[in-house]
Image (tube, rainbow, N blue to C red; front, side, top):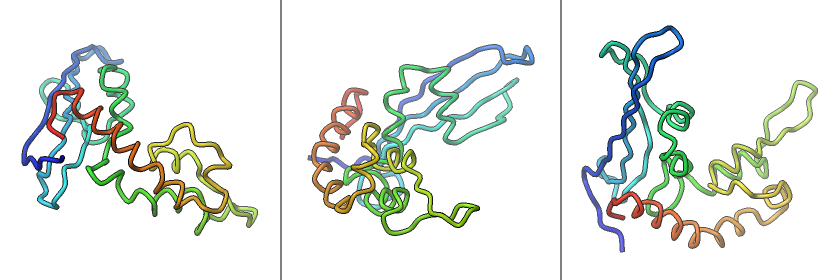
Length: 162
């Protein structure tokens, strides 16, 4: 059962000296709530970087979070996943896999972005075949219940209410 929450966040910090020798601080915020009021809790992992107390960067600083706060690395894959699944789960995956739409290469051929398809579907071990053969939508639908179970376990492992 999902409990809608309005403001549920955890904060993590890392202090270090950057390449220029300045003291720097990375403040990561992990949220799982319905702060925007759309009827379902959504998970996010974002951060802000400070140098000398001044905000110099912010948003989805996932590489920086992985490097400076490694205990959050396993949770980054859930960024923008809500209690009903990853953001635009099926359409985004299908788009990036190129089943319905592909980007044109310079030589006029079609190219698929399967790594993006893996990220948007939170399916890092999906094979090229699983992502490009007909029936992708059904495969995505079939794996969603187990994916949501894994997501719930990850959220609750942080001590957050699912």
